[in-house]
Image 1 (cartoon, rainbow, N blue to C red):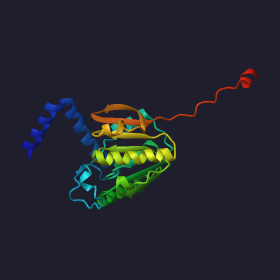
Image 2 (image 1 turned 90 degrees about the vertical axis):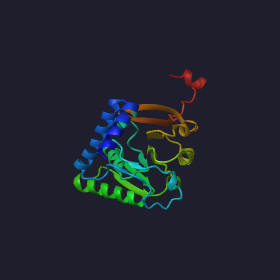
Image 3 (image 1 turned 180 degrees about the vertical axis):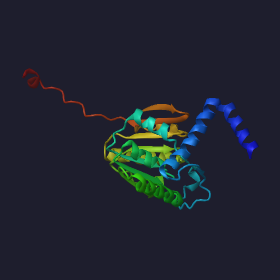
Image 4 (image 1 turned 135 degrees about the vertical axis):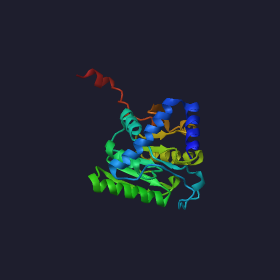
Length: 242
């Protein structure tokens, strides 16, 4: 066991350097400190193999891992999306991101997750925080496949921590695009560990993107083209008055 841990540590250093290893260790300690402080259970890694998942897309999903608090909040502060829209965590796992999004100040937070066990974890963690310090906004956890989620007009910020493969990513992005076509609005997609960023970048929905590397955690943030309608050109009569 010890030999395996040492081997993994040396392998990480050889690939990414000592600084990255230290950031990784600090991040893991931070995950456990978050749970200790909040009375939750969000740390660790959970594979999908032993979970109850009715979706035929189970084999296209990725294991659960906790999102680090400080990089997540720093990215939100830099991007500064409007807090009045709904924040959607796509593949919310144990619900840590839902709680952090609440603490950022979103008015409504939604988590979608296709594992019934992970949904139960998320609900228990939300309830633990509610009992301890109350909830600053409504948080809902929906058990459903990302391809079945009906993107709603109020959904404005979508968060993904590498939850699935590129085929599901393509379907989900198209569902977001269809919702924006029906209900025009600004949307942001915040993608942590952006393995399938090529799927997003080739979709016409998103007109701009920015890369962030915060405390050892890579993020890509995408936004659609949006702004107030251009002012109507002044008529000759209007220009002559005043």
